[in-house]
Length: 149
Image 1 (cartoon, one colour):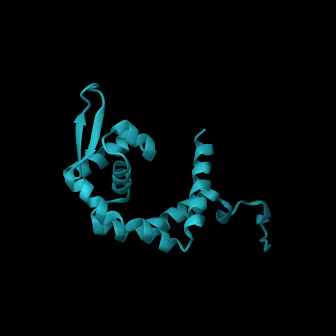
Image 2: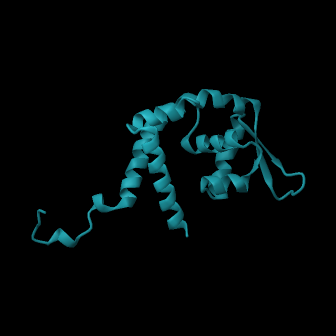
Image 3: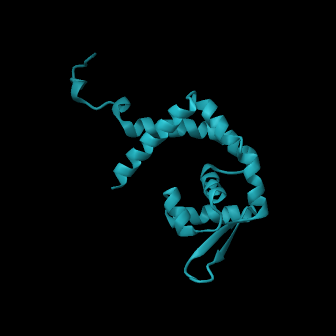
């Protein structure tokens, strides 16, 4: 190891930080996602909200926030924008007026077909095989769970 007069051997280096590896990988992923999402007219946060609704329609805002790890103050403007685009509808729950439910519109369901090409493009851009990417995702999810304890 090359050392300077300050003896940097004990100094943490940026490349040693897992948080930086994840942070910089996130930026690289965003660069890959951007043109794909521009083609369907969504931001990344809007896209993951839509994916969650494509998985299971008619959820509460709270349920969406939990799945997406987003606070209501972050999620609400995203949902308002999706509603403005005509992709979702927000309504008060009939049994509990405090809850707001989010449902896909016909336009929102139709967008799913357009977005089907996105995951294969991300897999290809990753340069990983499907099983390698699945393993990496599982390891990152395990790390996230540990950190949230």
